Image 1 (cartoon, rainbow, N blue to C red):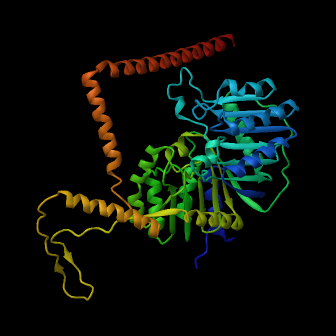
Image 2: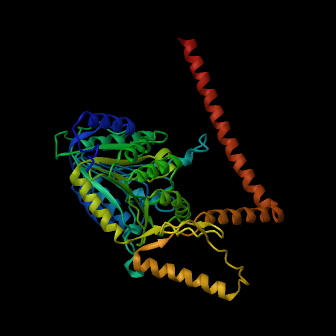
Image 3: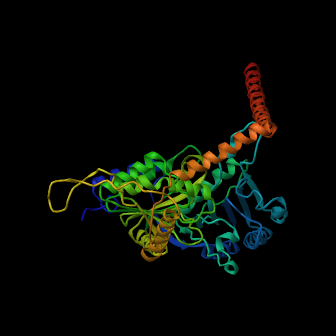
Length: 489
């Protein structure tokens, strides 16, 4: 069996390590202890325990912190630590927490001495600033214990047993060792980017805490480090590449990389939600199944309420866990954070969890291609090709045709239950029909009630004009200030 580039100590391993470090923009850090955390209940238990035991500082960065029982439990734990003299800093995303938690929710923590900042709220002079989001889920305690994950702080991740809604499936890690300093440094950059300054403190211990080597990939807008790394791993994998993603919208170069790996005999699998909390993204994801399936990539849809994990495991030697989805927003637009672990034991754990997840998933397969009338058929006995006879024209498309179509849909549904496989439908037409309906509706509204379109366009134009004017004024002021300082000199 061919060896993996992740398990050899030959010179090509050194080249691979160099390529991965340069692609990710992150060095390989040895001497860490890594624990795999599965689902929100475990996360919340471990996170809250760590916060309550903090002695010097707690740094929390999360996309969604909701004003519900879970969110209040975290806030109250932070308040208690702040009142005890522990430095507490919380950074949350403005879009993620919109209508989830507001100033009143954070007031007790601010009054206790904690610091709370919002990432990238709307600002004059930055008309497109809202595009970049802080999608990280990070907790660092005392510079010694770090967590990163796909889990937000919300009851939604726990499901609703009363309504029969299962908990969301999600994945994260806890870290001890030198890599924690990398996670803390990533938080510091996010905090600084939001206009805050942190006090000087004694760095956490850099002593080895385990045997695991990993990279902390702290993606920032337009850096694309994880995108380059994902491309490299798709190119380097020799046996297996198993992916889980919550909001997969594959860009062409990455889809081509996965397809090329599958054609070379790599066992490439993609596990995505069967039902998503963002239906539009699910539709876009399904529209990209066909080229993957044609290349031999196996696609599975989760049968539970929602799978929100973002993981990858390759050749039983390399694994990635974090907040990044396989889409352009995570790769290029957001602040994200992931760990890429080069350890056989951790990769085996993640691969084992992947196989458990597939037991609750349905595989998507392509329907056999129907032969066209008059198509030449090659017999299996080696006889000369023969022409398939044309079927007589069908007389009508009444109730019998509809009954046959209904029977086919029922057969597909029953078949999916019995075989854990579902035939891929015509996924390309869904987004097209949706787009057609939206554009037709806009055309009707524009024709009958033009003011309903004119006013939003006017407000949008005014917003951009105001922002551009503010930017021009600030640029002019900066130019004049520079000129005045040069004259003074």
